Length: 414
Image (cartoon, rainbow, N blue to C red):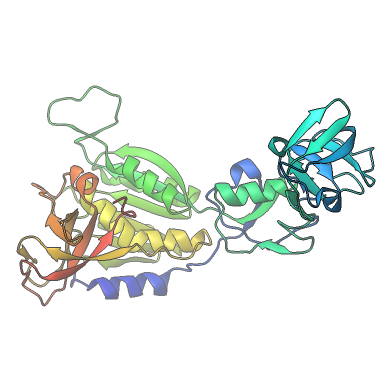
């Protein structure tokens, strides 16, 4: 039997009390290793970007005052001196009455302060006929206009994505200090579970949880260490958990936490270290048998075997811990208001999470429609759902048309 069931708030509070949820440390990685990591230092620009005045168009570098008054019926004629290509220092100087052909991105030659676009001129030998005037700095990107030397460009605690990596590369930085990504060991239990890729014997199912949870760990900023599938044998589970604890910062298991004779995870956790099991059952649906242990300071989240339940509890309890260890700010899922499309009931005395899909009517209002689950193990529940609603312990049902808050699994695309 479960111990006294905790409320979800009590369970979250115990997790915060028992585990140090702060960055594990700092390491230096290459830019190609940095995506999805969190900066551990401020990035200060050591040079101006761009480092020189550059042309933003293909055209001709000129003195702006030489083009004043130029128009279709009254063009200005300038003498062509040569060309400046991308990646080379200009050797030509633009004096009064002269121009230099220039490519996009090339440095502006001395004496020039604007660029006339190719389509606004006509070239006749070494003479340039200008049909449109330009003003000073037109079509010129000034030195330091994007990033100034000594400017703080990125700050510690900032996540690194494609755009941030591009900024680092533009500054000539090839290695960067980031917070260490927590290693999260993941193992599945159950005699019925088979590795994907192998033939499926009668009465068996493929291992869903270790793969979906590994993906969830990556999304949370951790490094998944998938250890595989283990039978419901107390000795094998004990060995597997000892290996996991030795190699990882966090351990996640799925299955073996209910009240059946094969549900041995809580018993094994009580043998591995102090204080042992700190949560054994939460008053929620799905996820009632969730078990959490602290083994010599390391968190072990033992989730239900049902795939939808396992992922739901991962996001409620395990994800904030992994994000904190990775130096991330805890991710708050987007919440939208919707109207209940049908009456939805709660489980008596337990906070109930109902997965829903959203539909928008002709007035632009969202309607939340429960996703048929069949059994709580249906992985398609989460694949089909846009998010979930919470029904409190003291509320019997949500009425048709009642406004509800839908927590989204990911941002809407409609």
